[in-house]
Length: 279
Image (cartoon, rainbow, N blue to C red; front, side):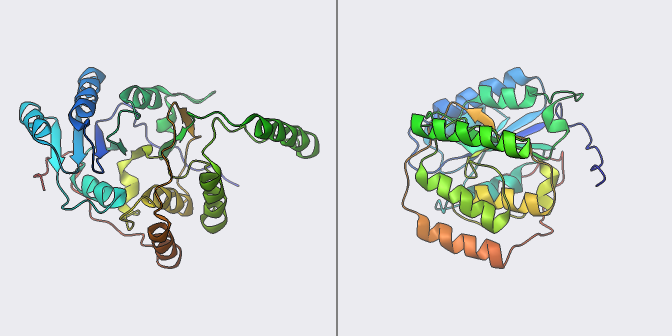
């Protein structure tokens, strides 16, 4: 099987950061200030897009920083709707998104940008279309660690290949959801709903966002996998997965639409590198 053609280097290109802000978010201004400080130190053209209902202190911060753009997509419908609005505003070749929460740290994005592949020149994002995190803040329970170790030894002996061990425990619901995602969409990631992604902006020309809710994180992976985009290994984050939100009816509805009626565009994106009027 021929190797895919090499991708153009992109690690040092301008960057759009999208912060999704589901209400209530009382610490929004402090989180945004931390991201602005990180981008100021990054030493490249960049923008910070806040997708949500901004408090007054955040509006004042936007007046002081030309790098910060606030978009209000109306009543918050979910993370997918907020990301769709953010992508309609983003204009740089590299796009990153996460939740506007203190758990998701700018330093982790710095680690993504600096991450290298063994035996390869440049940085990992130069060789892939997408990088994603794994919320590894909870250790795997010891009985499962023993079981996983025995399974890896068995695979190494029988198949000459040992699967990698889990960097953290996501809970039974998320691990079962991962199995469903792999069965339905062929996605091999474990933390398929991790809201911490660094991507090439160009992939969204064929990946218009259909989901309004949290299924958007899986939707991006499923469509990227179908389009044979290159996806890096999951990067562990010191983040504890949030509690189950009881939103399975919305997840089921959007998963059925994604499975039976996927939309691959082409999507309409703003011209790359050109300023876009705020929505």
